[in-house]
Amino acid sequence: MNSIARFSDNARGAFYWGFLCALREQHKQMSLLHVLIGLQAANPKILPPADLKKMGFEPLDISDLSQIQSEMQKLQMQSQLEAAQEGLGAANDSARAWGFGFPLLENAKAALRAAASCADAFGTRSIGAAHLLHGIFVTDAALAEKLRGANWTDVKIQTLCREYRDEQEGTVALDAFEMMRPRITRCGIGYDLHRLEAGRKLIVGGIELPFDKGPVGHSDGDVLAHALCDALFGAAGLGDIGSHFPDTDPKWKGANSLLFLEHARKLLDEKRIEIENVDAVVILERPKLGPHFPKMREALAKSLGVSSEKIHLKAKTNEGVDAVGRGEAIACHVAATLVSR
Ligand code: MG
Image (cartoon, rainbow, N blue to C red; front, side, top):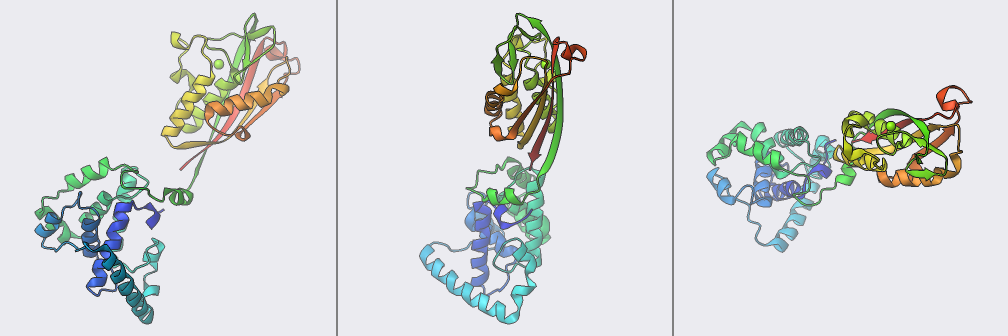
């Protein structure tokens, strides 16, 4: 989604100052040159005034802010009035689609699109001043030539874009942007089974249950945590529990499996994937699990950093059939739904 909400404070500044530049020149539409001059005014650290002079353009005089404010209001009202009379507003629907209140010439719009593609290519949600400079560079050959004359190269701009981070140019209205971005739903399944032996602790969903048998395993043998971990890894395309916590590694001997879930959550955070829903079925002949579900949901939710409302647990017996039915094993199935933006 491309809109003004995606622009960093510094990139948005380029449009405000560029608009002033256009109005002062009595233009009713903003050209790419206006955007460039605005970009310089809003980002003197990236594009110093001297560079603009080398290109043969005069930097915008923005020394008296209060005077500019009243000047802009006056010019803007005048411009809007004239634009309305000439029907220019309706002709600039595509500029409005970006959320800009002022008309843009075709080359300025093309530069916006190029800036947005550049931000996408480098994986940032916001569009910064560097992306905008790239947009100008690739859209207008004459301006690109002048930029080269001021020692700007494609490599130099690409480096700025590569180093750009979402938060570096002020707060961007990313919340609004996030809302507009399509959400991708991902589903994962996980399954686990552990043999039960006398004298071991029975831990399910991070909670120790009073019972005379418990799972045999390298870690604490928590089937619910293990199957859940696998469902999360599967949905996120992160492999499986064995690849992250090998049972040959002494580090995980007797480990609390909730640590696995905390680790999984960190990996999901890095990939900007959220947990939407977890649905689990634990299969065990005895003891009854239902009374312990509230505590289990709380423990799992805490490890995953989500509300316990997102964790759903069910218990089944195996009707006396097979190893689980004979009380020799505990098994668990989990389905997880995640969303990424
Ligand atoms: Mg296991």
